[in-house]
Image: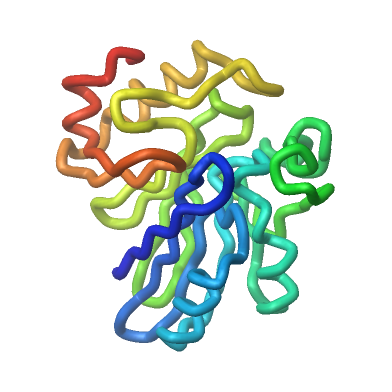
Amino acid sequence: MIIKTIRMGIVETNCYLVWDARGGEAFIVDPADFTAELANALTGEELRPKYIILTHGHGDHIGGIPALKRAYPDIQLAAGRNEEALLADVKFNFSDEITGQKISLKADVPLSEGDKLKVGGMTLSVIETPGHTAGGICIRVEKVLFSGDTLFRASVGRTDLPTGDQDAIVKSIRNKLFTLPDDTAVYPGHMEETTIGFEKAHNPFV
């Protein structure tokens, strides 16, 4: 598994391009934009992107989806099953304010707790983590966790936006993410990478 981090947009969202070095099949997590860097990585590595995976539906994570769908017509959009309303509603997802585009989306692949996706030789496991939004998810691949805006380095996602819930995000982190091995690498939606062990010891919010 190879992971390329590309920071995008006005709030420096971490978009992750992840691929299987043995075959070139790939997935993209939270494309805030379809930047030249992302396009060049896809073509330069001769990758075949199978999924766009959204950890949640806010505008700073979805801005690149329309262009990616045009460039790769067979790519499938995967998102949490409880994120449908937020993804569809421009008012709730803030896409116009953040990207200047009115983006309304419907997942091709609705995801639930425990679902598995196969990308090349990689198996992706879905963890439902409501709190930042009602339909937020994290994706685990081996000892790597893509945590979106649920868990940051020494912080957590805000819960004062539509469908957010402070109690829910704390429960999601404590009861689900903190049960993962301490050496699990955490790739968040913003800021720097961390580990589950570091967050258990140092995150003041949970």
